[in-house]
Length: 380
Image 1 (cartoon, rainbow, N blue to C red):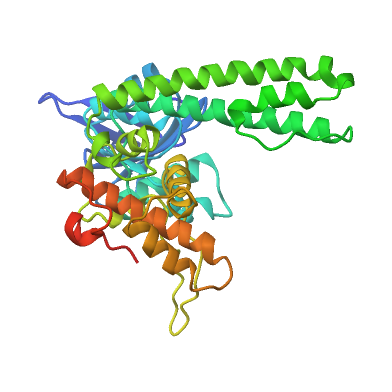
Image 2: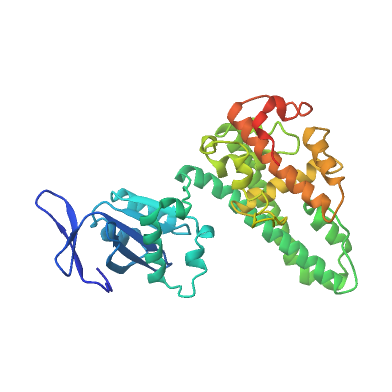
């Protein structure tokens, strides 16, 4: 053990049982462990379940080998950690050592994030005490499988390239505008052609490398688009059910399938809208029930894609369908930001519909609404 503030040893009994022996000679086997994951080192705290007493705390290097050695020595215990960049592999290593691992949702842990005494040791202890009291307090999440995560990385990488290209395009527009000229609005794919025709001669040499990078980024994005199409057609054929909805392409359908991973994880389709942060937050108290913005929980990129689909469905190129009619009526009620609210509402309703199509395998009839395709898909 390293930097333990309480003296304790881990011992293997004659019958093969692993126990923790504290400084008073007491033997403990029923344990809860909280781990505060850090980039280089992680703090942990060990509690005895019966009394809740802290019997051991320490630090360990945040590596696979160190985690395997450190936590492999403990008797089987309940282990809690927060979701983060290291939580996927860390939870797998700890689980393989025989422990039951709970990965906590940090958005729900105000006792930790809002604490005025926040440090690694107290965070690890708080995780352990919450896990000891009631696992549901941690609002545990489930990591995706390695294969699904690897495929989702393709979409994440594409997103990073799109964002980088947008920044380069905006940089060129801003630099040209500062000289008193402008580049006309156009699709991003046609930007370099337009820019070459409209950039002042005095700026061509300075901006040529940026335009080359934009072209190169577009080529790489096209490469990722082909990978997405290939995955959707060969490996995740259920995406075809989702693409029946006009405005939902291969990228949105594949991102939806990979992000949710298993449709059966939701008891009701309408829970998907909540999972993706498309439902309004609630702060009800007595007679007060203010109208709040959406929670924005869950996967940010998938939520952005669904909102983009909502814009398309309600836009000038959207096909006539139940979603469009419903969203148009909602936007027609007027009020502040009525169109924006309608787009978000359509995105939430679309998420529910996509899940129902995925689960049921029904053929989507856009003019018959949800009554035939999925009765449970009504989202308020």
